[in-house]
Length: 361
Image (cartoon, rainbow, N blue to C red; front, side, top):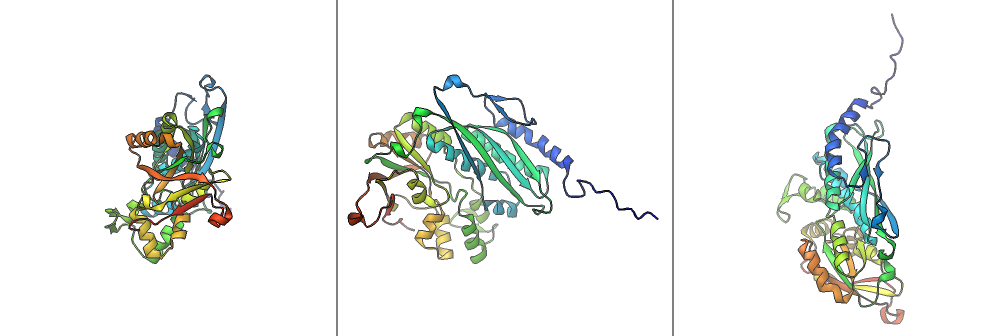
């Protein structure tokens, strides 16, 4: 009688080398689609190689950004739909890079899974590849890590780091902003990738709305609305900066419009915005109504329909709007930059002031 304990293996512990290899094979076509001429080598090396062509730049400055998608992943996992979440990931990274005027060059992803299901990993990477194509950057490899015992078999998380480059004397930022500059809004495609913990709490837990249920206000199911990919503005912002005098951009993510715009408004100035210039999408109204969420909470959690903001000179407003319209980006004048009033005049030192009310909200 043999009482010896069977030898332990990596596969028995929950990690499949074979599944990982199969996932890599499925990923290759998508990684090869998202490339640039500067990329050297092929997928599978220990490091991604990117040859920075210095003859293009006089004094290049590298910019870097890291981000994830947050709990929007829970919706994708609940619906078993994974081919758009990668677009959200790319958007969160590259649209932070472009705020300073940087052109996104390449991105590397990290996918942590409870169990490697090659087709699911490939679907995620397909979305990342599509996002990189939209942003004009290369997907320069990444990592897929299997974490049995730490994550459930159907669970995964994603993050990415992107690198961009900008000419030193062309960097955008708060130091360029002046009184009289105009704030231009670029419309969002919905919730984007922020506020999903509150959105899911209200719509799924409090209102008990099924993800598969048709919502008349949306003209589609709740799940389709919540999985709408984040709009990627990188190419649009770069085109705008090439055609008009842009002072800076602000990517509207966690914290909402006011908090993110305040990051690029220098001390002594105030951006005065008018809520009456746009109507937030129906999804924002539904969350506010079903959860009895007040306006202040909504505006500091969600983008409320504004995904990116450009601050431009007053002389270039019409040109800026024309550029964005030609690129099919919803855009409108949101407000203007003024000298910050004294405490006696305003009672506060807000760098961003929202006035008026949203029509029909």
